[in-house]
Image (cartoon, rainbow over all chains, first blue to last red; front, side):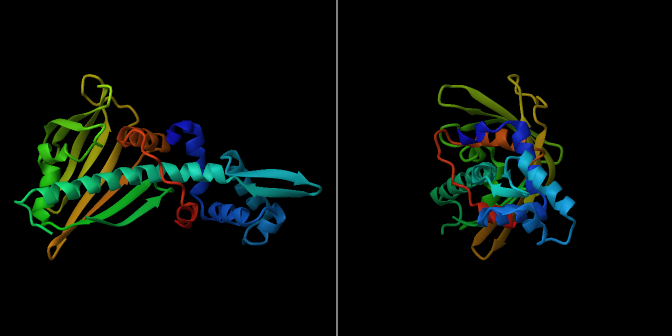
Length: 116
Length: 161
């Protein structure tokens, strides 16, 4: 099963990385197109160093990859890791969907309940 | 039955799930309170649940196991934190060892269930809170129907939270 593939540390890193609004925005920007750290830094009211730190957190969680190109550091999104994190909560959501379906069946099969 | 909304919060590791049923609130309460009805829906068809203990009062506890296709058993427990039947209740859910007693493995999950009747329909809201991503993963393993495909990521929705 897909959710088995990630180790505890990996998952914790991903959730930690995604728990910050700036970092989520950086991911979004990087998904739209790859761009340099300095380009990204212009978007936020914070120092270049602070943005660089956020990028580093995302890099550790494998959510983005950084590549040096000349003087620039180019940030690219890693959609596969993002998909994995999303899958985990979605999988739990599916469990509840299935449960709700079964509850619906039980309720409609028992005449002592109020019928739809 | 219709699922009204679901909300995933990756920051707090919570899942809010809202569904509506065409039944009175007392009837929906029964499917939680009566262990024979609870075990008909708690586990997936390939991992049906059996509740050997179920006490719906504050401080009350439940013991259950889910039986897999090869006869293997996954055991769990509940502890009731608050009850306001038929409007809802709050419980902890955790893993149990082979003896059926709480093992302490991965701590516990909090679940708040709220029922509200509006005309002939009852809205059920469950809010599940996890302590860690690893715990969430284990709960998913335990609750997943074998071979069930996972929905692909709606990345934007997740990021928008």
